Image (cartoon, rainbow, N blue to C red):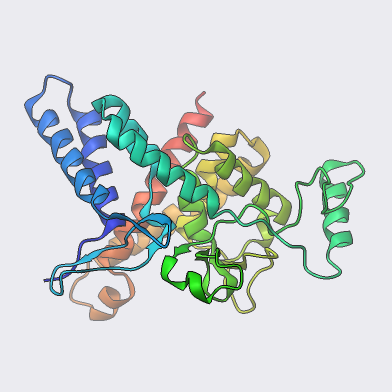
Length: 310
């Protein structure tokens, strides 16, 4: 029963590939087996691709009970940097061509941005304060356009094409609400194959300012969604890695205390969660949630250490 999962498949393949890289060598039997299994998983992932209404995309899952495919896709279902590495090291020309399609789709998902009414002067003033020089405003200024530009819409659903006035809009966010954690995830995973997308998102972060980031923003304007919360641990960890990638010392120093505090809190919660006799603790701190948090915090701390020791 159940269903295949494209995001999960990519993470499993990455774990096997990285494990073979870290713990083995090209002549090691187990390492070779892990790499072969990673390629097999990627081959299954590739079979999720299809073309619908002229739009190429990777379907989100295959239902093993109903034998039916999902009719949508999410941007977190793509990992162009990983696929490029596997294709290159395996000499897989077909996978490389497949991955080019992934990159093109991700680029299509980048928001163009439309400044909210009466916000142009506010954005220009913010830009001038930070850059220390005159800004031409949101239309063509050095600030890089409206505050909405650079986010990434999360969903691909070609079947809605006939409902759209332009017959083209199939990459979108319901109610235009974009989850920042997903955007940071996608940006991190295209920083090599589509560095313009990752850099564009980080430029958006710079325009908004670290203290004004929320869990959810509107794709068209970049404004925070009313009622949205401050960023979670995983998103801050991703932003730290992106800041290190961009070599932004000021941002790195501003973000790293948050991530270190989050790591300390995580360790405290993990220690408390070992007390399995307390069902409330189990309910509040699920193993799955903690594993995902650890998977983002640990690479961020490792990257921070490497940056500090450089």
